[in-house]
Length: 221
Image (cartoon, rainbow, N blue to C red; front, top):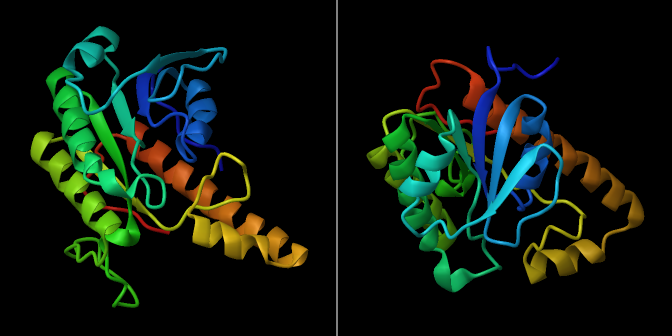
């Protein structure tokens, strides 16, 4: 089934555009929208995409005012095993992005994580209250709260673990060490499974950004 497209070509801003999920969203989005890809790394060269290097902890209102996106997908995050001392930055970035998106009336989609839950329940209702048990989950729950407090047209997407075998996925050393010990058949099966998760996450994020009437209901696979 094809992904839905906006009624007219929209302007879409994607944060974390060079990240594991973001770099897959960019080529999908550019087929249907004019894309500004924002990353903390050096800008890439890619046809049909405007790249910008930016620090999302700064005041972003000027940047958003200049580009004026119709929707914003906030996929940037500090992940566990990458910079554990600065996980609190997730809340700051979410607050800055929400503030800037609200100022120009752009819909905001926040990519979150099911790590906001403790995992003590076999299934969680959409309105279940977050109960994280680690610092990363706490940072993502705080990021959700910051976005909801700063914007009134926002939806968050709680994805499950997204992990693959690509070099771009830094992962945690412990997970990577275990992954390298798997048999080749298990590696292939694992790649197929994670590709399915990634595809599902991308489709959900895209639908939330272009479909009218997006709500505060989270999504998990």
